[in-house]
Length: 616
Image (tube, rainbow, N blue to C red; front, side, top):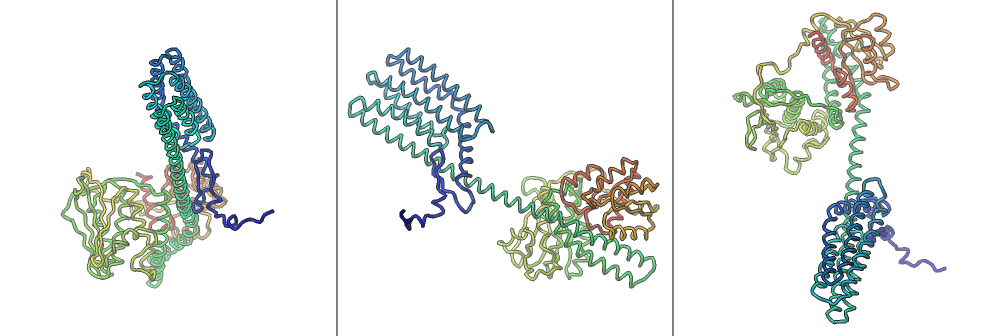
């Protein structure tokens, strides 16, 4: 046997991947996108079927009219009976082909390759009928009708390009028969004129055939690009889902120790207050500060996860923008002053600036922007203001947060909204956060449909603007932003609470906290223990349940079981979950959802609000 030549051994991977589809279209699979010819062929065929069916729906009447003209030419040259019979046959053939191909062209009826093969066979049958009539017409003396017939036949050849959708076999079969019949008809006239016309027709049909081939190749390229983009999109979505699942799965374990520490810190401070021990109070404050910093960092990470998972739901209400800005400025003024900055709250003369949005989420956006401005401004001032804005032709409220900081170059302005990206913090100073503040702003703004813009130049500070549709001031516009019955609910009398959590440390720290405050607490590790406590005669005023219990049990199931046993206490669900369906299920059941880590004071406030709502 002969040894393989060097050329054979140098056969490239691209050439190895070159194959020919059933349509006759050369396909070169791009190794970089991972698409082989075998994978690509059914996709191309499916697209060819889709395009052909789309065109087929429109072509029945035009095709019948074209054949009616051919029959009329046959009538004019003396083939009256043949023309009528032929036209009737063509109408039946066109209608049968149209109905049959549309029926089997429905998704899932037949394989695309089968559809294309049957379509090509039907088209060849029509071509045979057409060419038979053409040859019979040319058997009569040539006159002006023969030239018109030639023009119509060539026009039909051009019109057939679109319906075949780059399927070369279909077009070659049709054009070879019809075009061949025309060329033979003119050549057999035995004249120079006939030979010239036949030659010209042959050249034109060849050009059209190459055009169909190129159309098929273009379709292959488009399908390849589309499939590559789809795969890249799927990869990106899977990566995003994997990140979300990681945060969702990790959140429970990450939040548990912080939750326990939060309860213990609240207990230490309460004991310090009761005993008047200043040292113990300082220890409690130190724990709370460290816990606050850790919780803030973790909250930022998991807030992104919740927003990406769709676990955050906007609850719209009328919001007095100036009152909201005043509250936020009041809470941030000590922080700004401690940083040596002046915090200006402008626009106090603007009254009646109301919007309809989620109050808590809007507050979160403004707090993130204001916190960022204070972090990265070393001297000067930070301003927050609101004003009516009709520059876009719509009545809007514009909230502006500006600073005199170092500014952001144009090329970095888009990046500052990305996760973990920080300008001017290469050493990753923890006190400046993780670089998630603006990523959270972008996600919440998208959820609330708020337009966020950034204007900045190096050395001239940065200006962030939020634009929202303005609404008329509602009735009772003087009401407080956040009515809170917590103090009354907690202060009237201490209550009974049933706490369900599978972590002993959490149960112990929570029980210690509420017992110190005078509450009567019973704790259970699972649904069975909770039912036993309830059956023993303990009737709680509040149910506090961890969403995820051991052995894959759900706190929601435990709550439902207690409800079936006659416990009508309001429920609070504590969770680190961000899976939207689970959160939605808890909310639909009428349970207030709190996300770990829950600060002791925050938990007491939520319990007070639940009691207040139950007693209202």
